[in-house]
Length: 297
Ligand code: NDP
Image (cartoon, rainbow, N blue to C red; front, side, top):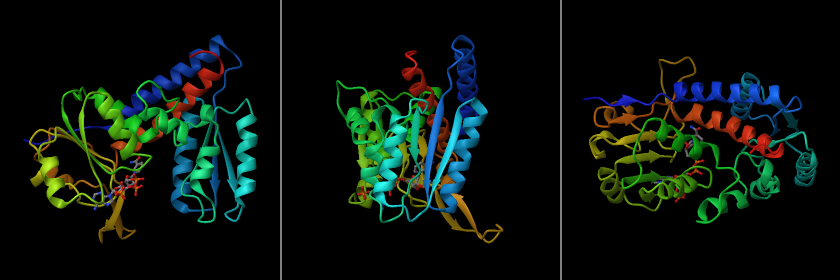
């Protein structure tokens, strides 16, 4: 038996057209309604430029105005903070996304916290993250990758409540909030991190109905440690040598796809799994923000 493939491209395309229709309908009823996202890119990292281009293209596909503010890599922290403060005050802007990583001389914590909570569509500020962890609070925005994964699991009718869930990785942007969201959905969640032993990884993964890997290490999850029928979500984005490729490398996830697909019930590919979900959730969060600003949510 081989697993069925969870098609992140198809799920995100479906949500993309829902977002586009929603914006069109809202504009017909409210002519001034125009969602707007500003992306701040500091410096010229080629990988960041690719992600920024992808996000801007996606914005234009659904009717969100996407604006790139490209800043010199040598900009001071104070100047960057001033830029963010001005955008916080600009009522035409509904989302501010600071493309990470930032140059070393800039404190990422300080910068992500400087984005007003209402416009923090990445959900990385302390206030938004804290709200995920508080039982009685509801976050304005959930970080896009965890939000996309939960949406994907729901679209695939994967039961979370009462299931054993393993999340590998505990970062603020993926593993940490995702583990909490899945626990809030009723999963019994174990977090694997860099201090976990290989024995613990094997023990918990082999008992897990849902395994999410967000570690950043190729072949971290292999078929031999999976529970048959498990749902496997691969967040990792890694590059390994591949002589058959012009670039000499190919992109892969954390999951050894070839062995896991033989054992799992459902599995996401890389590329084409979690990646497209992350991008679409940026758009979803901008739409929510603009609706909230217009008093429509
Ligand atoms: P971080 O580097 O911030 O976090 C990695 C996590 O993995 C940490 O919690 C770390 O543990 C844990 N870890 C590292 N090594 C091991 C190990 N040997 N065993 C167990 N745990 C380990 O990464 P991110 O969360 O930002 O991203 C994770 C991966 O997901 C990356 O490959 C990234 O490129 C990818 N990604 C993909 C996205 C997508 O849309 N597809 C979006 C975001 C990220 P500890 O906390 O103890 O240090």
